[in-house]
Length: 438
Image 1 (spheres, helix red, strand yellow):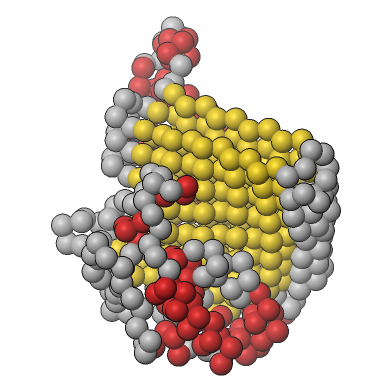
Image 2 (cartoon, helix red, strand yellow; image 1 turned 90 degrees about the horizontal axis):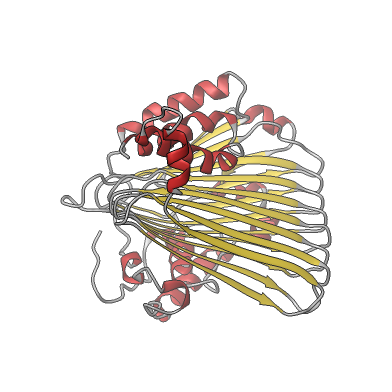
């Protein structure tokens, strides 16, 4: 995988562009053309104020013959035990979009729930895939979304029929290869009317040291919640220290549907994530809870969007950031309410906890409210731990370092309570490891 200070063009004749039926090949080619003709975003404008877009310009690389992190086998075995003990409904492992394995899907299949590669779904669920794939994440969103649209090898498709409740989570583990590997994960989820699904989407692996090279991940997630559906989507980014990661998530929910998005980010060198939900029908409700913990020289750039395209809808965002060392976080949150979307409620909060002087956080709330019949608030906090809180705990005989750990643990506790049981111990372990070095 190579990078330069100039754009890289996607060739016309490569294997990825020939995958799938005619309509899919046409969409891949259209994405390639859009990517090649779209200039690299200009540094400093809007969502690229704090992150250099050149970091995400890469060639296709090689993901087929890479060595995967030994941590992958350990985590895979842990999740297989959770599947055997009944904590999960199914487990899917995805190595670079080239080796996708499915565990425990037989019982789901008996209830009409489909969990399969997109390459299989285009045959068995043609109508759903052709209708929804590229509907929310396509070249119209941006240059790097067009890159994924052209170069993804194979993806994961999940469909829950009307009225079916998947009562335990489906867990996806998407593992990036080591040095100089490139991954373009793709996920399409359709949750039927009055159906229910909890989905854990975990991204790991990648290069450990920049001396030998880096790894790159560019992911796209599309989730459709039909009328009255209930969807919980948890994404965990735990990629290795020399990984550059880009992820675009978009969900569309209809009348009476609910969507909970839980975004957790701990890994990578440079991470840019875009989370968005479009509320398309009265009674639709979306909540986004975010938590990132940065250390060393990590760089995080997160953007959230709640688009109220229908009246009588409600949204809520609570995005928390903890930084130490020289880590950097930039957060931009947009609430958009259309002119005809009356009687909407929208709330947004971003809280940043800085554990030392070397780290930095930026927060930019954005409101685009095009009618007056709304209730909308936003807020942001940024600063160190209150010394009075530390002093109070020390006066009770608690050492300074332990007092700081207790305060941070309390800061993130509300978010961690939203994490599914099979993942909660591992997330808590990551947080505790970061706190040990305070």
